[in-house]
Length: 70
Figure (cartoon, rainbow, N blue to C red):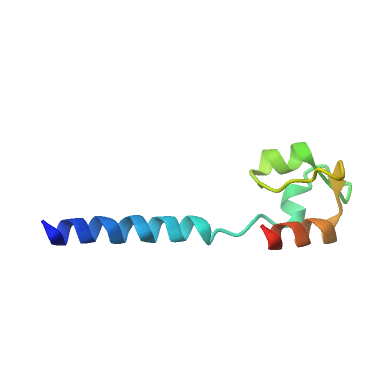
């Protein structure tokens, strides 16, 4: 029974670590309009969970900084 519990704990830890290790999509992948900026709706559609409260859009440098801080 201890071996089964340890196995499940290990599997859960591995799955959660893999989820945390996922990298954010590149700027070009998120900028679906191709205008050189990513909007809130583009971030949401790409599943990128960063806040852009101070601006309506982010340029590539701002996006890169935001996803590296997240």
